[in-house]
Image (cartoon, rainbow, N blue to C red; front, side, top):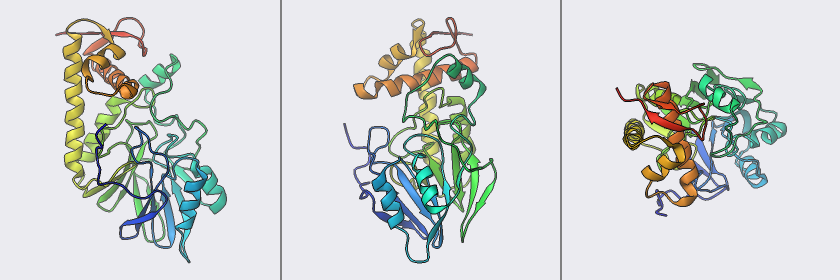
Length: 306
């Protein structure tokens, strides 16, 4: 498989200063879904905010604690969303440091009604895995401010990749979690991911004058508005392809994924199938398609032509 960003090769466990008062530590969890691994960010020069502590890995915990210089302490632990590659280490880090864990809510918070319906039908799994035990000490709301020692973050609820997903505005820079990445399009895997919410979140961020995005995986994005345009256009093109395929007759998400993702490696096809399902649910909500029978992952869908 072609490396999507050969220039981004930070050393695992090493704190790289990537902006004034901001360091990044790469977790040792590379995979097709996490790229080089999870980016954990340390914001501040005295009281430090740890953004996305990452997987429950002793080596990564030791690396984060080793970044603390004399006079520094961890004052806040902020989780963008409750996937297993972002949130689990928050519990041990909180016990050691005494810092509170902040997030939008537990792993079910922010889930839309239609995704609750899918979950109730038995649809689970897919993607990076859910940290079902995650529970923050402090629940942050959309529009809230998290204020620390010399830094201030604006909480923006950006569901789509995950229901409880937040982004964090720091002046003209955004910590965007897994909503936006430069090396790949974000996975939207129902019932945890919701494409209707994803598109709304992308359009909401597109209306703001950001200079740079720091994603949960991969390099910083220095043209964030252009990247948002690409993500929106990419999803619209997938929607067009799905509707065109359904013109040939009803089909399920797996069959459609194999028709549309013709160059995708076999080990990534389950994720591609989830992405197609996300589109089909969104198109159902927009009355462009309809499931034949109950709405479920295995359902066949028909195009509702005008």
